[in-house]
Image (cartoon, rainbow, N blue to C red; front, side, top):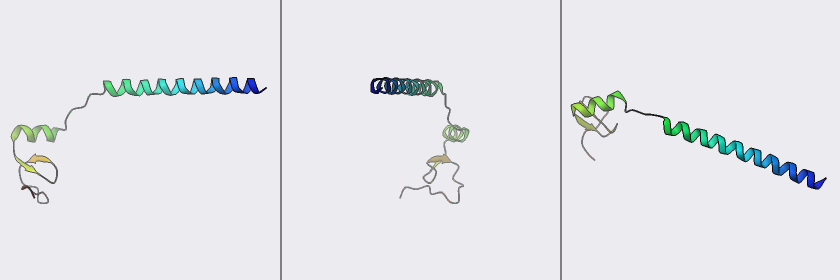
Amino acid sequence: MKHHFKQWSFSLYSITRLAFEVIKWLIGLFAVSAQTKPADDELNNSFRGGVMNHRTGKFDDGSDPAGWYERD
């Protein structure tokens, strides 16, 4: 009986480990194929130039009333 339980638990462990490895592989596959692009405001501001808004970390036209445009 002990041998049967040991064999069953090892089989369950192996199946569980295989399932996690397959899931990990699928997540990696989807992560590699994901394509990201910068937000439109990041692209537009970098093409136009502008002033660095240190509050947001982006370039803008300098009209943000809560932003600061000089380094501390």
